[in-house]
Image (tube, rainbow over all chains, first blue to last red; front, side, top):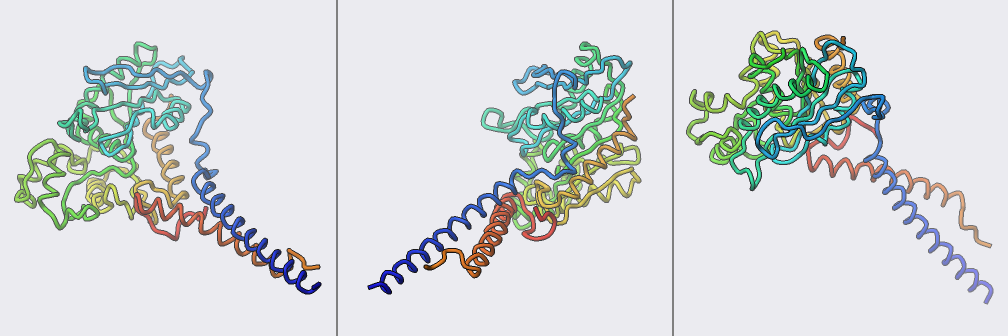
Amino acid sequence: MRSEQKIKKKKHKTGLFILLCVGAFILSFAGSAVFKLTYAAPALKKYTVDWNDETGTIHTDLSYGDGDANKFDLYLPADQSKDAYGLVVYLHAGGFTTGDKSDDADMLKWLASKGYVAAGINYTLRNERHPQASVYSQSTEIKSSIPAVVEEAGKLGYDLDSMAISGGSAGGTLAMLYAYRDAAESPIPVKMMFEAVGPSSFYPEDWSVYGLDQNPEAAAGLFSVMSGSEITADMFGTEAYEEAIKPISAYMWVDENSVPSVIAYGVYDKVSPFDASKHLVRALEKNNVPHEYIEFPHSGHALQNDTALYAKYMESVEQYLDMYLPVK
Amino acid sequence: MTKLFTTKRIVILAAILVVGWISGRLAVRAFLNLMVGGSLFGGNFL
């Protein structure tokens, strides 16, 4: 009778221990997942600032055109005593179809805290309401916005005398187009550009992540939508294609006068194909444009697996800003 | 009297905690890689 009770107790404790193991695994798994999602590397913390009245002021939804999306936000540094300021524009990501200027509030606040006038600019996204919007139309909107940004900053007491333009993903593409294609017409001189993971060339063989290397018709369809002009499959490899795609191919506009650039790309990128970045890197090298190219060997579109290199990207951005757009 | 926490069980529990921790971070990384691309190993440990 006693031994039966003993066996029963032992079984009960074994069951309890198994339950404990399952609970410990679930807790450890969930804790680790949350930690992975929320952990911020110490090297990147300095790029997030505590924003208050002593840091600066924010003016939102200032208009630069008639469209609903033709709005920009200005982040102004608290020190209003200088004769002139540098402008840094940061353009949001979102695959040309989603996203908003407020997505980059942290970056814009950090730039303003350094003493720049920082601007986040919206552009008309391609969606059901705007089926005609294209990368090209978005790039022309950005071009038309800069004079309004300069004028508005002046009205608020911040005269701008030079600028940098930047962005991530889709915003990176638009930043490159302004810096390499439109800089000569800018109301203030463009001094540098920085961007991450923005597509800068459109050749089907580079876009294998979408299968476009095997499907010229699909490639023609996608690139027609992006360029806003009609591209057919039989145009690939011809001069006619080069002409048709040039308005949105930032790398084609790089020459010996192009502005210093900091660029970053992920080798495993599934969204903006890594192979499409090679033309840009070659163009910058060939034309002796001062540049810093940071390749993320373990990362995709979010540059998520190489934190040390992301810190290097931000340090390079800071160095280039200090060198080419110094705060007076 | 049977003890719930024997040395053997403490070692097993510790091993389970380590496996859970590594699996959790790998699961997040695998999911992100699936969405935007990336390698499962190399780069960030945390």
